[in-house]
Image (cartoon, rainbow, N blue to C red; front, side, top):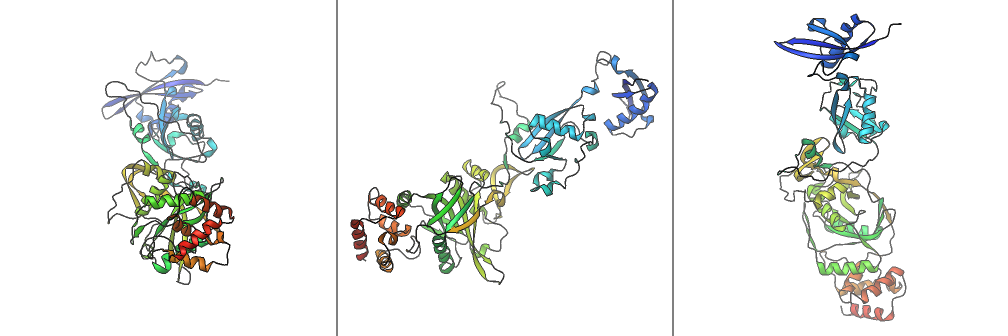
Length: 494
């Protein structure tokens, strides 16, 4: 049996008065077969038709006798290394491929697994950048250009430095940038890859930190009834939600505090009162609750526009989320929606601002000067961010929203007492009317209303009286007689 031998074929190619010298590896049983195989390999490597007329000169050299000393200006083709750039949701990374002319897509995936730590079975590769916009496994099936595991890389027209796009399932830890190491008076040289790595990437966040939000029926109804019946959804209205957060990430909203504010069709401006918010905080702590979210309405004039939240609303929601420091913080929207009978229903929606959105706000990326002619469905950035595979300064607001499931419950408090900072001022007459209306209930039930406690706290000691009353409300124990007399005397002054 004749043993096959390896050859290095030297080609001289003349094109437009220029002479090019190539070395092509071959593996043949007979020396005279070198011509045909070398022609085919040359065609695959350099994308020429395998026509012998191109080869004006060639000389087969046994591979075992080949050495760099014979061809000092040539490289061994078998040791050629190609760098490919891989763009994924994590940014741009690089892999090195040895012998790319004989590397298959299956082998490339193994290389990516070794160098980038992404399991082969989780990878979807494509030369099409739209791969990074795929939202579901079904979307990924549309990208078939690299689905054949036995296809060779040269068939994809890849070259040194080419970009491939990678989508993968699961999570991984991406190595952070190396510590700065100055080299010379001007510091370390920055490459394009370094600059890309430093850019902010904006991607959709699939899962909220808040598993669900449940609204106390009374407080939700008191809020929507006012904006529907009194304001007719003509101007915006808002407030802060208070309640509890469980270890599982479930948020319960038990009352809504409405700060002093001014609303228009497009804007909602809070006039934050530090003294009043101290009273709110004292009551909240005494009730064993905390601030858990921000709620606001959208006006009827916004109903026809093609966005979920406007740029102004995203900016305001991100501000309060960042201020809270609570990862389960919820943003709720109340609006009118047309039903099947062409009537209008009040509709509640709940979101979380994504982690990227909150980070962008904290680091000052948002353009806060919003002009009248700006597109409300886009948030402007002060610097370029990467959305998908594109650098941009305008981000669709929906990228910042993470949907939260809504439930309802009957909480421990009532919401029948007049609410603060509305069109009608709350006076002691309101306290007298409330106590008369609820006189058949136990006294602790009569005062189990945040808005009533807020009125009382203005006349009581914040460090002694308020904690004592809120403890009674929280535990639903009898109110000391002295406090009952004090509260009834306050009501009688009206």
